[in-house]
Image (cartoon, rainbow, N blue to C red; front, side, top):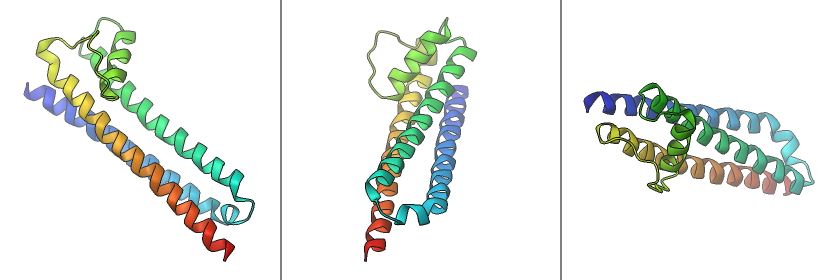
Length: 144
């Protein structure tokens, strides 16, 4: 049990740190793009920013799901990589269909997968709203 908690905590930490680094890279990229973003027309540039944020959040989610799938495969929780990826995706998104379940002796990892996904969706939501709010403020200031 203790080894599952340590392993799950490490995977969650790697996932969250990766997400934070990706958010930092996105902010640095937007700072670099600021002169371009300030100039009209703003509609196309807003679309580019939204696309960048969506790609970033999808990358964060994909990384998290694959990290968990690799751990599940390495720990021989599931017989195939496909089953591990499927379970990771279902648990990470907190959908929890129940058609594929973790064996009882490894069930803490399943719960930690869901908790990790829940935390990452919060981080992704914050990233999306913060980035869009920052760009809109910057564009409004350039109009004045």
